[in-house]
Image 1 (spheres, rainbow, N blue to C red):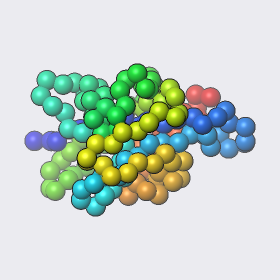
Image 2 (image 1 turned 90 degrees about the horizontal axis):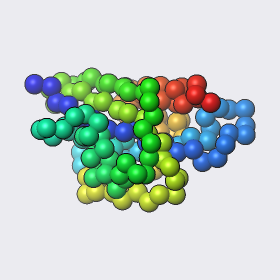
Image 3 (image 1 turned 45 degrees about the horizontal axis):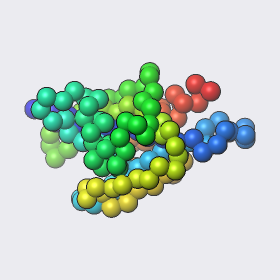
Length: 148
């Protein structure tokens, strides 16, 4: 049976871009796990019985980062499905893209995470050890830059 998880790639715009580099004002929220290899990831988690995928993403973001749906807006048109293997079992993770409404909102970590950082695309890709996550972050950035 395939494990299924869902989450949000949360970003904030610090200011209107005034330099020629489109997207240099965008930062992504990554959380560092307090277990295993202490990898960095957007908030995500396993689907509970009776939940749909988006409900899971919203619940996990609330539990792991202290952010409920009033803190962000989910962008239409971006949904990414990753498929990989964890401990010999197939896993599917679905991400939506969400923009923070107030960039100064406090992040409140659960015990599952030990740190968080707001990062530029390059920084987020460096901290994210997995190629599929790096690719997803780049796709999110392209999506955001194409909207401006």
